[in-house]
Length: 68
Image (cartoon, rainbow, N blue to C red; front, top):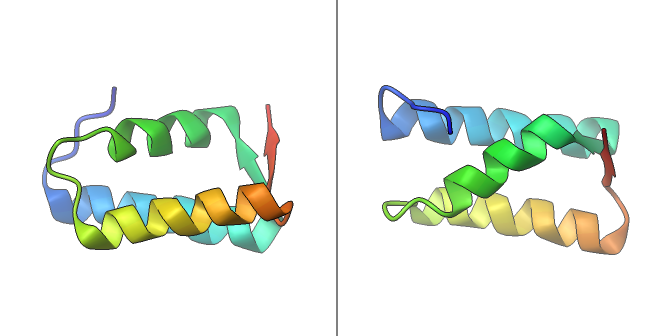
């Protein structure tokens, strides 16, 4: 599991992963593992949860594919 120096850095990392996945239409295995880890954190913020939901929706609709 990744350790982030702050929740701010974790949120920024998650946002970057989601933006890249939406832009490229694909999500790497490592990025998917990172998102999964963040989504299971006890202190996940509403913004982070919303980003995870956006990514899950994009995966479900076929806009983003898992690669790896």
